[in-house]
Amino acid sequence: MKDIVVIGAGKIGSTIARMLAHSGDYRVTVADRSEEQLAAIEQHEAVSTAVVDIADAAAMKALLTGKFAVLSAAPYHLTVAIAEAAAAAGVHYLDLTEDVESTRQVKRIAENAKTAFIPQCGLAPGFISIVANDLASRFDTLDSVRMRVGALPQYPSNALNYNLTWSTDGVINEYIEPCEAIVEGALIEVPALEEREEFSLDGVTYEAFNTSGGLGTLCETLKGKVRTLNYRTIRYPGHAAIMKALLNDLGLRHRREVLKDIFENALPTTTQDVVIIFVTVSGRKGGRLIQETYANKVYSAPVAGALHSAIQITTAGSICAVLDMLADGSLRAEGFVRQEEIALDAFLANRFGHYYAQENRGAHAA
Image (tube, rainbow, N blue to C red; front, side):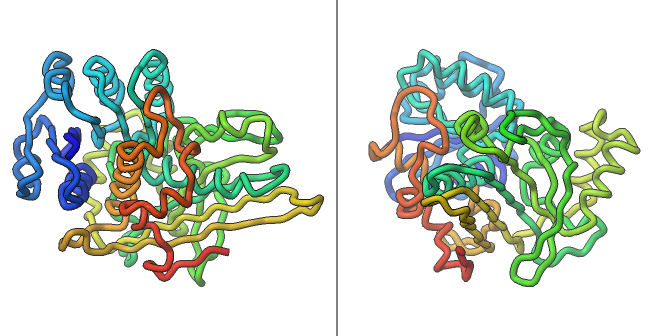
């Protein structure tokens, strides 16, 4: 059995611990500064907990030393401190961050590392890049890569048409920070919440708009190879307009803690959600202009006997699959590893990646 540390005892961190513990191949220590959150972690013989302050570098190094890997399910602003502790302790590092600047710093930390540093192992960034790179590899030349992902309530019941299913800090961050894109072959930054579009899938109308971080490192990987590359978050129509009013007209982009407090006290959480993954790639094969699309919906479902939301399943399942592939030697075990280095077929064949399997979800690929 391999010893793993999961940083963060929230919705995603607890799901990661549950998946790994019930696999029978991992011993998991869940670490957090909140004793209250740690007390809510499922009791299991393969799970232990530790109260730790991530800002305490010595305590972090002591916690990680001798372990196989650390998985960060902590807020994005703690990413760099955890990566530095992993480097100091000489353990593998995986995270779920969508924050662009944090990932750049992780890449810097990984330059001289003898272990693997694999950031952005969640849904988006993460699985979405694996899918997009797989589709792109089927073309002789690329024209456009369009990536769309959303975690939505199945039964929206408020003006935002939204419930909290993910990290509140993460949602606010991706609604505010600049977004990378490739436009007419040039790598540029575009503003969040802009370039709104509508599309239909299975008879339901959605909107999608720019958000930060979803492309991961794909811009660097495909720069010079594609004319158009962009990522947009999927919501129900009307969401973007209200968010722009909150962030811009009311100035809450400059008062993130106020907006976080409003969200967490006004928007209920739900396990009745759906994750939508929609990737369209166009390019030339044999001289012909061709388009290929991957479309998938993942719903909430039981994991190890307990109901989990779709965003918990997809996010935790993804980082657990990457860990599993690292543990069995399927992935490079040194330096900075990009999500697009991971083969889609191998990911989906993995016991944790199998949560994305379309035959289990009533979804389709075209």
